[in-house]
Length: 103
Image 1 (tube, rainbow, N blue to C red):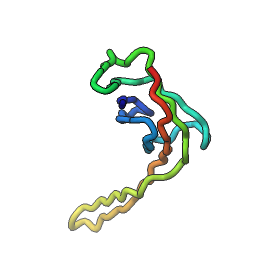
Image 2 (image 1 turned 180 degrees about the vertical axis):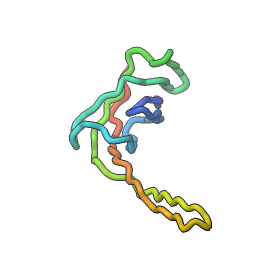
Image 3 (image 1 turned 60 degrees about the vertical axis):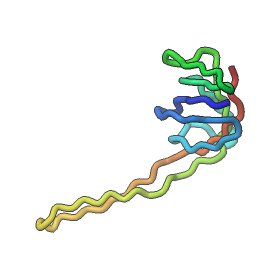
């Protein structure tokens, strides 16, 4: 059984006991969170597609840790002008573990 769920503006395919990195959530480590923006549910071939969401289905998960992603380097250069600029970005992420898909 798997579901496609909208978490913090991104869509993820999740299954039970799966760990997922999502954008930073406002929950403490060890807290339980639930998501009700479920777009699709597949229960061993019984597929339910939402319009836009599937009614009565919730995903419950546990926050494992708040981490930062790998650094992404941004390098800008204009040739023959002596212009170079290097900057970096590290996205704040939350690691969650899916506990159950109800519905």
